[in-house]
Image: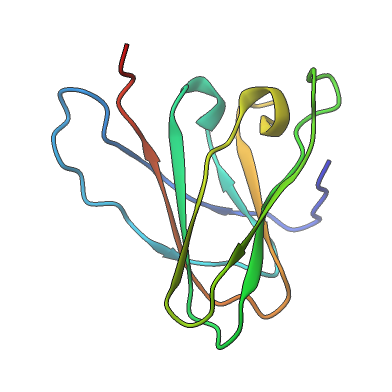
Length: 124
């Protein structure tokens, strides 16, 4: 489980689920020092996190392991290409969900860029 002493920066979910039309996501600057938090991400089946890297070299973004009471808590790391790289993460409730249904996102040293999160439609 990821532990931070300072408050994580919040990422607001943009709802693209059925009936909401096209929603402009608010990409926010990566908080490499404190990490980031997506509140209530565990309530939704289909969440997409988009990470953009503006650093001159590839950098790693990590979905932190969830609470220890989950069936399969584990972190998921993604290497995002340099300069104009864009990567995609899909949190899983049995791996990444924290006790309050949020998801934590951590970044490697010198990671610079932006991040946004989306609720995707639930197609049956």
